[in-house]
Every structure is written in structure tokens, then in C-alpha cells.
Length: 355
Image (tube, rainbow, N blue to C red; front, side, top):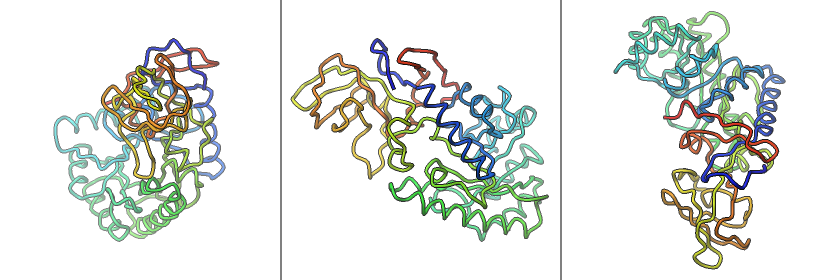
């Protein structure tokens, strides 16, 4: 990805050509598997990319917050799934959920009777998917609890549509995606059987899964819907987890060398406020410098990145491109994406749903 040298740094830079390639590849994979694609928009938080995903056949979008749901629904997204055990019992959330239902086909995740009761009071008849835990052990119920929760939701007046899971343990190690994908399929199959047996759903249940690593490992039944997010840009984690090549990564943080204090070291003007501090235990450093891939971004402070183990000579004023460890947090830290094409700035896309 060519980046113009005169950029104000740090800047989050996106290749339009690579984004298109990534979007098209995932849409084709979902289509070939006969599985609906509902991308997770928390990665990009950006209206032009959402419109692009929908134009390539996505049935709707996945979001994590009410703010994200409101933004994309207000711009005409036909279907939004809040894949989160949303608490609706405080503030103005009831009114906001009611307004959302007038804008889009809305679904919300649930994993407790308490949350279901609050959702039912705020938005009677709301469509929900029950979250099941497929191995990340964050939120979600065991398959053995699906029947009782589905019955409770139905008695409260909610419309149970199916089940969903996030196989987040795919991120635990570079070799974990295959096992996590199998776990995902197993728990969704069990949840589907439970929902069919209890008789609270008309027709076949929605069985929604997905992360970029497990989707890259292969989309297959019993999933009826897949929700990858990071695939739109890729990042350093996905180079290890999903087998992405460096040429598949569509986003970099452009940074400037501001100091060369010692041989083998440099300081960049992109600290934790630009690169984020996310780093899995199995990955050294805070990003991959394309101009010096042997180096380690060893220490971050808010506005500084200390680079060590440099063999490539860098001097003050040099522009470098950093592939971040976790692209979702990086996007949430910036107000705009600088879009480049053929090495020139072609557009600037606001990150409209950032928190």
C-alpha cells in the first residue's frame, strides 16, 4: 500500500482497492456456503464501508452498541443485529429501541431472564437471539440452558428467532481457529435442536456465528448466518490467525520518526492513542513496521512508540507504515480514515460510530 509522504501523522490510512478485495472475498465465501453474511460493523464504524458491504449482498449489519445501531439504521440499513446482551432497563434505552424498530428490522442478543424482562418491557415483541457460549467463556449460556431461557423469553412476549455465539477463543493462539470453528458449529447445532424441540420459533431457527478467524477457517452448516468484522481491513493478528498476507491488509497507521536516540532504536509519533495498547500474549510488540519488519515496537506511551532491534536505518523525518495488532481498537481511536488509491489521497471517510 503506497502512502503519500506529506501526510499529517499519525494517520489511519486505508487502501480502497484492498478493502474491495477483502469484502468481495468474504461475500463470495458466504455465498458459496449458502450462509447469510451479516458483517460486524464495530470494526469500521463507517457509513461508506457499510453501504459497500450491503451492496455486495450482506443481508444487514451486526453491531455492538445502540449508537452503532442507530447510526446504520438511520442511513437505511435494512436489518441490524445488536450481538450483545443489551441491558434496556435504564436511561432512555427503551425509547431508543422503540425508535430503532421503526427504522430497521431489529434483533438483540440476550443471555439472561433479567435482561429479557427489561427488553420486553422496553420493546414488547422485540426479536431476540439467545447467546450461547462456544468456548470463550465471556457471555452466553450453556446449550443445556437454551430451552429454559427460550421459554422465558417467549412468555415475556419476546420473539425468539434463534441463537448466536462468538467463538472468541479463536484469538487465543495462532493455531486455535480450527478448533474454535468446530466448537462454534457444535454449540449452534445443539442450540438449534433445543429451540426446534421447545416449539417457540416459527420455521427454522437463525444460527448465527462468526469471527474473522473462524470464518476464514471455513463457513459451514449448521450456521445460517456469519458475522465477521476484522476481515474488512485485516491486521497483524489476522496475519497469524487467518493466514492473511501482508498485501491483504488494507489499513496501516502512518507515523513519523521523531527521534533516533541510540543505535538500533527510534521513536515514532504514534503511541497508544494511535496504535492502541492491544497485544495478545503470543505476539511480541505493538505493531509491524513495514519499512523495518525485523524491529519491535517495544514500548508505547500516549504519543510515543519506542522501536528497538532496528537493523534498517531510519532517520528523523522518515515516514513509516505500521500494521496494528488489532484494527478495531485503532479505528475507534481516530475520527477519520484517510483513503488512498495509487499512492494519493482519494477520500476521507468519517468514523461516524466511534464511542
